[in-house]
Length: 170
Image 1 (cartoon, rainbow, N blue to C red):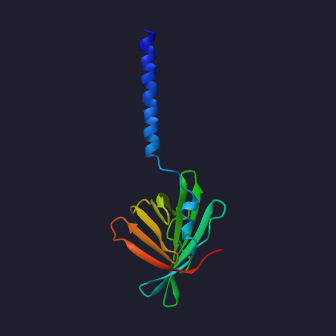
Image 2: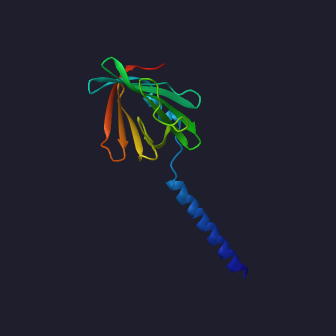
């Protein structure tokens, strides 16, 4: 009887250890703001003859903050306030859209929330959304002087934004 109990115990311990090992292999490593710090800087691009400008602070404390604006014909058409905050599960990107009068598109307590879903050196993808579908933003530092941002929305073709470094942030 003792031998059977010992075999059952050993089997249960082996199964538990195997399950933990399998979970450890599939769990994504925890990301941090350092993984997305490559986007810091003052970036300018052309979008159909309009100025597309994005500015990101370097990480400080548990966050990075940024803004994007589209200026055409000497007038702002659209702007966004952006932030990336280090949360327990990794960096979380939040944004809000505003028109030229500062009227927000999102409800006051519901920014668009995108979680970091993948990162590798000089590239990070954030994904999330609800209602209208999924939104995915992928940032790629294609060179020391260039940043590419791909916006993908459910049911729409991807949009590519290409920026040149106007000024590094210190």
